[in-house]
Every structure is written in structure tokens, then in C-alpha cells.
Image 1 (cartoon, rainbow, N blue to C red):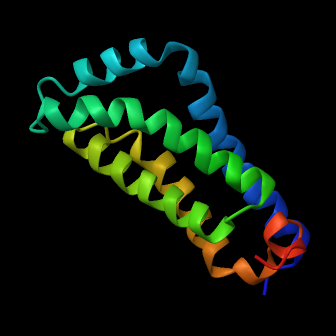
Image 2: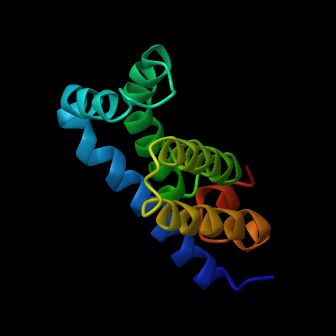
Length: 131
């Protein structure tokens, strides 16, 4: 079992990263979407998938990060974050952006650690209210 304070700090680090990614994209959502669809224009992914994803991603990052920051639905937020990382890794591979994958893998590994030691999630709304 991990001690509660290191768990909290790890959860806050992952949460802040996801929350920050989503937050900065919200005011420029259309520009972000246009940038992402342009990035994938020459990839094997169809635009019909890329365009909706480009609008969903910032909301998913923002919500997942927020839930991790406050410690609400932590297990579900960790799993959602890991799924987001898997999709981002797949996208990076489709673009052959190999330099982005280590960062995404690190995020994913942190999220897996959070899931592994979820019993240490003492400083959270989950724990306080027995959710």
C-alpha cells in the first residue's frame, strides 16, 4: 500500500496535467479542432472520426483532470484518463510523432499506479463520503 500523502500528490499531478490541457483548449476550441484535423489530414484516420474527437478531447481532459483534483469518482477518472492516453498514443503513432509517446506513456503509467494503489486515496471526496 502506498502512503496517503504520496498518493494524493501523484493524483494531483496527474489531475493538474489533464485539467490544464483541457482548460487551455476550451477558449480556443475551434482553433484546436482545426489544428488537430489538419494534423491528421494525411493520416489513415478518417476525418469523420478526427473532427468529433477534436471537440471531445478537451472536455474529456478537463473533466477527468477536475475529478482527479477533487478526488471524486477517482477510480472512474483514472480509468478514463488511461483510455484518453491510449487514444492519444494511437493518434501519435498514426502521425509517426514518436517524440510525443514517452510523455503519454508516463501519464499512463502514473494513472496505472493510481489505480493499483486506489486504497491509498484517503485525501479525497471518495474516501470522506465513502463513495
